[in-house]
Image 1: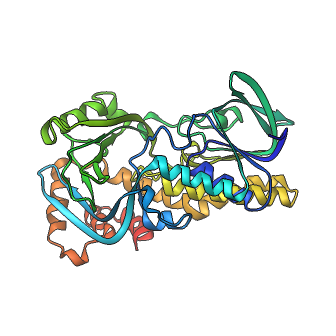
Image 2: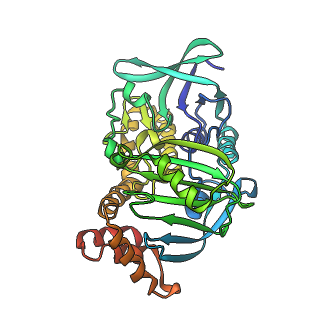
Image 3: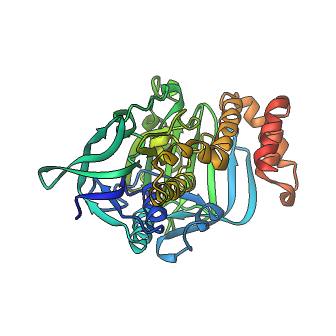
Length: 387
């Protein structure tokens, strides 16, 4: 390893790997540091991603595709089910293999990768970030860089160390829990969503198939709900009712920031990407595609800033992200706030109305228009992102 790099990326998830790749493709020196032993582990994700969002950055590979998705199923509190067919709309991934493949694209572009490197501080000179402190094999080390890209997840400390405001109100932090279970007999081409106060108040419950009768099963509920009854309790109740005795292969829990992007995601010498920047889609809680977008933008800007010897270009990242994706997340957040407080009766009526729409005319945009029929301002928002 060298004593100094042009760019240091902290975290080797999808956002970090894309940041490392897009910077390295501009022939600047890049080091990506990952605190865990293996890239892609542990998996803390529902693992569903849209086909369009994925294929912008990597060609699909059967090795890391667990299921190909062509349908969504929505089940209301009264058990009314409505299905939307899309064609091949997306995938459920094997994140351990997928993340590894993304990291390989960064490596192929020229980035160096070091695992078991735990970043525990920043180097700052003249109010600008200029490197990191980290522990590796029991030794404390320092390494300098011109730019640091923080992709260290929802619990990110790097932004805070750099003086950025990373606080998220607990009401916008979804409490999420998920298991991967066997003996789950569901259609392998369908993502299942359940709504209502008994399954996932102020959120939704999901079943995402993963092949061979296995599935990711979980839910996310708002911080307000989580203080009264844990997400794990809702999950246990659902499993006891629908899949008693199903073998549990893995279990995970954590917070998902379902809010717009942080007000500032850059400062001199540093950019935040992915969950660290709160680039998760506030409506769905999905962060794979948006994290890759954020990482690619940050990587491009980092490379340009170094090649042009204009490090101040880092500060253009906020606007570049907002113009590409951030403004959509603000809209998704307004839609989320408009629907997550619906009563069970309202959800039942929406499902009943939508079930009367012919199958070939069912779209997500139409579903949201029906749901928000009496909220004109939100109908405009729906039109902006779905039409």
